[in-house]
Image 1: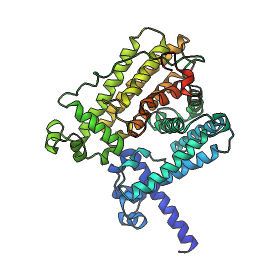
Image 2 (image 1 turned 180 degrees about the vertical axis):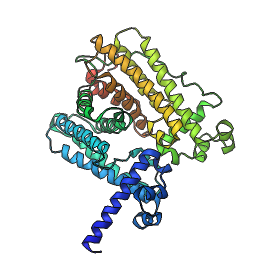
Image 3 (image 1 turned 135 degrees about the vertical axis):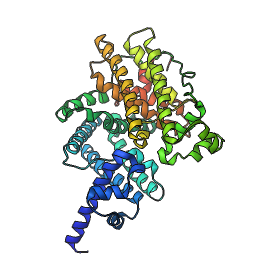
Image 4 (image 1 turned 90 degrees about the vertical axis):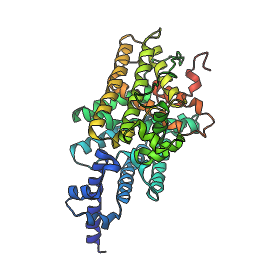
Length: 414
């Protein structure tokens, strides 16, 4: 292949990846078709087969291209000396990338949650790239002043950093582009220094959620729990009806006795999750004490629920595979939960029980942190799984660079 032909080949390949990425973000890998990609790219479907062969090969290329661009941001951040400086550079450069994408100067970054829907050999191939990205992000915390940070705590904090960045796709498009710099600084303030006032102590009051994940009408809770776990772990496509039924030792016929299809099951799983979140918020608001007591008790209860026998909550990543009407309903439900958190944070700032932070952004970051704990539910081989809620909730509320968890525990917690 001549240099000019090679250049044209690469340019067309990148154009196809950009078109496919936009469709994946809109419809998920499940809803992206080669015919649609070809239509957007202005070529015939057989041309895409020439470049990628199969649909999953194209999807894998989209994820790999996105991870390569994320690694460029990580490399830029690694040039700084301290963890605080590195995370500052990372988030500012990521906001700048999101702005350039919104302005149409760069192609979109794929929503990475659909990586789990890929089959072999593409799944292993992309997961290796994701592992490298995760490790590079974790190494941003490997600085002299963070020498005390152990592997498990570093992994949970890294997972939360990535979750906060990816969660931007949920709420950032609601803002004007000229607000991005302000939003970035407000988010950095919360990420680095948390919500709690200096000297605050982690001493949550108990909130019992064990009996509040009630069955959805016409659907047993065991079905929703099994479906939620499998969808969180394998994605919409990977969590087949066969797998869900087998996990309950039931037949497919028994599954369809309760539900018409998987879309309805995902929607019901989200509604169950929202009910748990609303219950935690209501019970927390009824506690005696100031806004700090109430808020961190709610966060602790929800983090505990994520690894409980009744958990986890449905991850927002399942949203991509839903039809648009169902998707809008789920987004509205998530927004209502966020607005309630925003009101609590606003009250806490007014009472001087919390740091003076942006309540709207704090609410979205609380949602992201709670969402991130669901990943720990999958790590059942972790001998310290019961400490996972602390490993997420404490850095969220006290700042991602806060010292060891034991330093903020109240007398009864230590």
